[in-house]
Length: 239
Image (cartoon, rainbow, N blue to C red):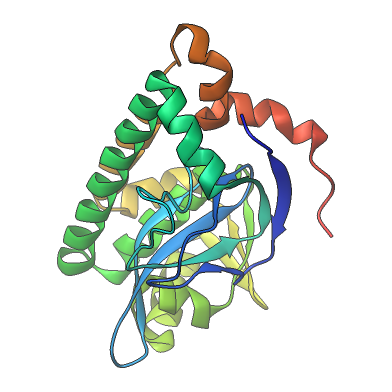
């Protein structure tokens, strides 16, 4: 499928800004990218996350843009594809377009669920939900992330994030030291998280395990979390 190339995203790497022409589409391998809505007062709020089940930056028309900021929330490798080539592949492969459309539907559902979660659920529930989704995507227990950045993702003041993290840490669910957060008790986090985590996980698992059809199988593999998991052996070590 076109010219695919590996790219490493460090934490806080800005993938694109709102209304910026999307030049590339990225398929995360072992990192996580946040989609953020910037607000007028300079704060941001995370509306969705993208891991190895999906793609970042899907232009529906040439030189298209999104009203979102995409930032790497967890360091990792992604596969890059030129946006123009991506659109060409969509025109050539009907099954690929169907998979992409299905993923976009799932992404919209995730954004809607996040909107409800941000309004109705406590900071501890939302933080637990965020940690569980990140844990699912990255496949590791330790995350390098500052409280300030985590506050930006959750749309909460650093003090609120610190208090919520402290509650989870006091319960033996996580450990936080010098910008490094460790998941200690995943089952405990699941008991604290709101129902939004289960809803989102079900949606993402469904689209990640959708098999491609017939002759478009090779093109569809780039959208498959299982296929990309197999690519990890060929990805260079982190810088």
